[in-house]
Length: 322
Length: 251
Image (cartoon, rainbow over all chains, first blue to last red; front, side, top):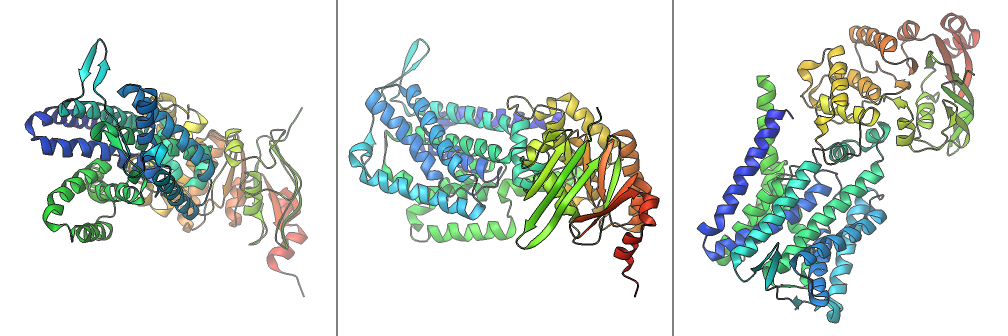
């Protein structure tokens, strides 16, 4: 990518950020909540895109990492009485350690075993969380109340939904920025080489087992950080978030938005979270069928997803011009 | 002391009951371009696979620059300065020509573990990749995904990727596979040029005797996993055993 294109991408990033900063003052409270949720789900799906879109490993158990991060946050706040920052740090640490341990175990497996193991792990965690009620609160979950947030010399009140929105925007924006930078770096680019052709990557000097582990840990930590945002938004977390349907959503959002584009998961989550909210009130019974139909259309006609298809077309044009 | 670049001792490997390599004692001296020939199934590619760490030998040792590398992981062997190409083109198809070479050059010349700087900010790596692309005249295609390239260009890129890791020894596995007569001539010229400018030590597996004669200083003949004979091009051409293997036994 040339310097000019790189510049363009950061301009786009800046414009989007500006829009998102203004947005909560324009939207009504309900839409504001949807937008806040969407940022969180986008970050979660970004975690999936890192391991699948960039590394080529299909992790169908992303809910494990979201759940670990979420419980990391809630349990740290509940038992250790840490503030919001401490909670987020706990979410990051718990999901990082968890994903390194799981990654050490399963990134060496061939692809189909890998997929099965990710599902199995998330199902085990779901059952454990549902049954260890004293620890997790089961499906009722654990309720926490964060009243203030220390920010430098100030204590900001967390009662306002707009404040929560800005906290979540700040966390998601920072994490997304760092992930974009990472995949521009020598190490990040090498991870893409593993996806493209693992045998050759080994032969040009890459320790592909290590690269897969790094990607797995990054993916799990990003999803775990998103999980840490869930209790900030909803004042609780519960065992249901470990359920496989959430993992399926990460796959769905990324595929619709564009696998491997990093921006795509946010677009996919944006469209589908909004559509679900819009349609399910009066089409609740046929909504899943509509989503299924959309998925079939995307896979048949635009397997690269919305953003992937646009990017390919733009690139094709640029190459023809030169 | 004159340590051979590559040396194998009594190298052997079995696939089930089949002995693909048997007691192979091979040596490549500094500055040599050696061809490895033999009929199909002689074990030429297997020999490469064992040297590069893709396959673990069942017997024997491999020494590279005097170091015992038997059983090492491929990436470690590569980092030590041994690179190879594939008979069946093996590149990163969705990535550009430039990125294919950059990824390889990044392990050979750059810092592959950096994660806080842009990959293109490593000027040494970029410079090497740009010079390589220019040297073969692929500038126009540098930004194209490799999948869009012609077979001939892909074969050429296969070699360039192998070279970008900054090797001291390059193993070429049938670089002219699938090329037309004209393309084969061009490719031979290119390899000759590269062997003059960029890489001193080469082992090349090849079927085309014209290419072999043009490039190699010495030839080693492999037959059913064993070294049949070794010598200069003329010695091999007139060797009775070689004629027997290639032309069949006279009745």
